Image (cartoon, rainbow over all chains, first blue to last red; front, side, top):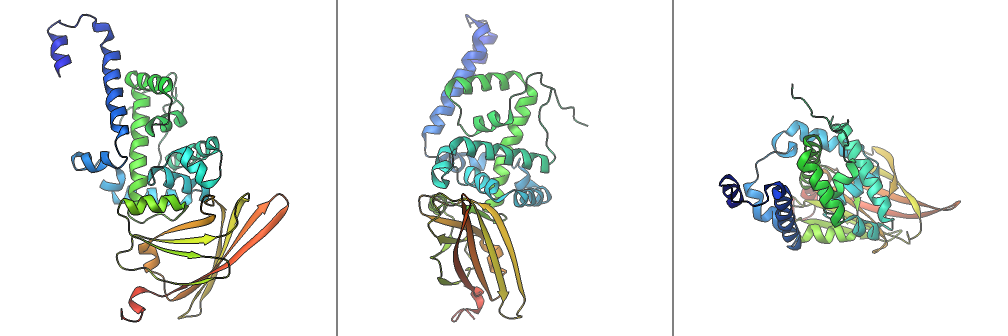
Length: 126
Length: 200
């Protein structure tokens, strides 16, 4: 807010660089958040978040997503669950399951693509 | 109808997923952020990935998903408050199992020398001990936890609570080159919680 007020008042010396400054400040906030324990963002801010997700707000979409998850291959579903519920990195998953880290990313990428396809989502194609 | 904006140079989905998970190196992270700042189409895709991730988490939390996981996953989920009933079986062993009303998950931990095997498969046969009805199914490409030396099967508590008095026989097959090895059987003797002595 302070930056916007300074910008409006013409007090910013290099307005062309404002985008870089804002991104840098946001990046520092993200890094600071990541340094905290992993469960803290949800427990800290969860109550403030709007119910924007299909699983919260739309039981039919949630049912659909559950069916899409069940339609994945076993290994894909495992990696998706370990990633998004277990909050484990691709390195942690690779170490636990005896896979190459790159393979974990490939399997995860394939699974996400299938889930998006199953849910009727598409890419930002040119 | 909502118009979807186009992008001349869309970021790969894998990169957007990695960004959302905080897995990109500093320079890549900055490049992705700057692209998202300028590109509405990719920003929407990133937003949909965030939504998908949260939806997946919610589906698991609500007990709608069955998956092979890791021992570390069980520890972390328990630390986060999930109530997990666990049964660990060695080959040839039988476990008397159930699911309590407040169990979020039931985890079946099948021990074995699984290191070095690719493409573990599982054959499951079940028998309803009340009606005599039998059935079987199989699952392929199961991952094994190499740290604990086991296949960890996570079942939603609500699903297990719906099982009748039944016996489940599990065999795991593993391939190492041209050879196939069998592990098991692992036998689960399931009794519904309200039919256990003392709960009736």
